[in-house]
Image 1 (cartoon, rainbow, N blue to C red):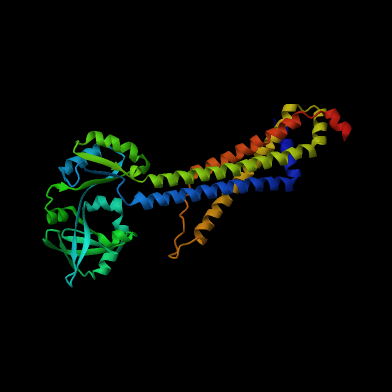
Image 2 (image 1 turned 90 degrees about the horizontal axis):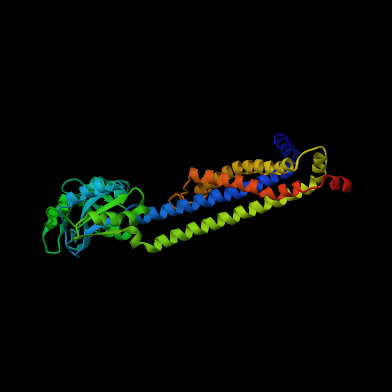
Length: 383
């Protein structure tokens, strides 16, 4: 084996141009894998974050339409104890009403009474603040479009459909990046909404986010089993079948691209090394005549493939990361943010590099078998 290793290294260093060409070919394949994989992973993460990253992933509501949830505090506690994968659990009071502007016009709103500390982890209001702070007692947070349209000042008057009104201080203005939310949502703490609509000790829903959003459809049935029959549990996966279909389509297309790139690299390596056997047939014939075994002759090309795979994988990872970095610097939105935020996964990069090395080694099996079948006397006789 040591002899085969030395011969393989001698062959590689003797034909430097050919060796560099093969290594670059492997590197291009690995770089495409790393870049495409990181691009698709980043796109999927961004789609999931935009779709459900700032919303409830599992929601508990009354089984009867329009009914409220009594004793929500105990239900929240039971969910937190029974399901450790639930990161944030927040009761919610949602009620429609009106914001009464100074000129007497009414703007339809959805008042959302939340446990601000927990809900901020779900909706990230603190990251979306245009001005001000999160609401405290007697304060509300208003969407940027609604604040602009209604010419909101330091205080607002909120009205219920039954005509009762309530004054509130405006603690801040938020922009969630969705026009329908920015035009309608007004956020307050839970007690404010309960007092305004007479929902003392009641909530309209319980919202939660999970450690792994893709486990929602598995966790939801378990929660339904520990909750009263008067409540129902819904999850985001059931309600977003089209999004999941799109994500699966992206994953399949990414995998297909990587498989065909890998296949082309393997065929290229096998072809070039097979030609190398013909080029070095005289040397191999002489070595066999001197006593080198068929096994060692085969190992020469296996070692060549292994060395080329390592060199190509290392170069390919660097090239792929460079492409990824360049993409985030040149493919930008008007506000200067990347069009797609790439997700660099060390495990994926490591697996891609290992696959490249294994593929290069396996590709060398064809020339290795051919070298083992060489007849030294015939090679020497034919020159």
